[in-house]
Length: 111
Image (tube, rainbow, N blue to C red; front, side):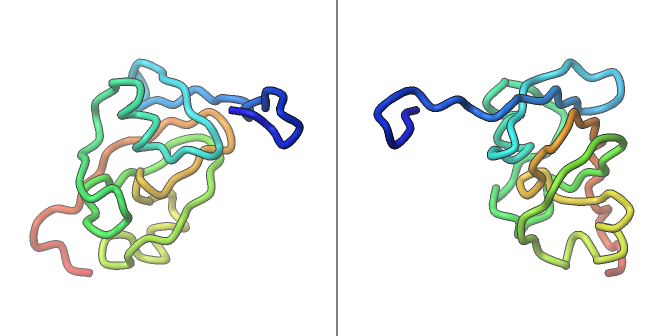
């Protein structure tokens, strides 16, 4: 990666991400979503689907840490759920170390 001056650009600070409280940590960055970081590290523990925020397969609950979210369908995460730490791993961007738990919707769950 280079900056506009032709020199090396410094990548933003990385964070330690975990799937589950006892999960093995892997590196994440503010400019890479949680799911992409998990896949790049070869980590497991969250379902993978469309990678675009539409299918809900990667629905998680953030147990600890700070993050921002990108646009995602409300079919899988309501506004109220998002306020309570739920989101789609493909749309969660860490702002600190994170611990998440995979919590996919159960079939037939009313929305």
